[in-house]
Image (cartoon, rainbow, N blue to C red; front, side, top):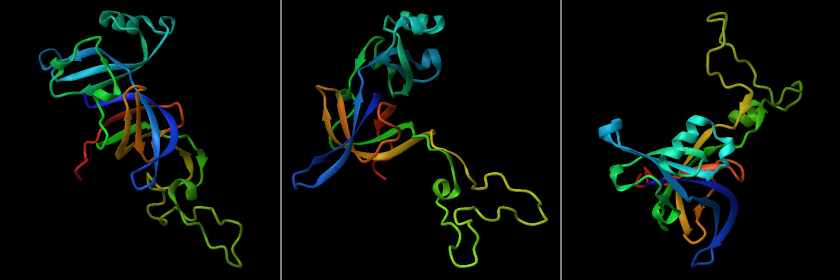
Length: 212
């Protein structure tokens, strides 16, 4: 297993052997339970489905209730499928914790839903520099400026950087250092920032591009 679901708790700092402050994000990972094991013989590929954050059975619809009952695990709010080299190493109902996935000194990739910024202008959304603020310029300093090409093609091309909804999208941060793992409390402290607000669910996996 190379990935685990968890919850972003917030940021703090740790100090290394040379008393340098290291900003870290604290993530509570697991415990996750194996709900389904997929194999090449039955499904065409090797994968393990894991669940996170138990849920009252009253809030689960009948198809999902049957899915959890078949695995004999309590209903959960979140399900995710993780590809593995050999799914036969796992069994339905097995519990997976942070110490089973991450080790100090390794690197990790974190995926989550970024913070929503609402409707944002081009300077905030696309890092435009803005227009001149010298004499003779109207109060359009944060306006995008001209967006058309000419009489031909007489339209605005798709994908033109303009104002609009910003954030609240799936985002992945690569190669964060795993500064510390607290197996007893199920915590991982990752160097740097992680997408999403406090309390949001994130997927943490061992880095896939750790060597460049």
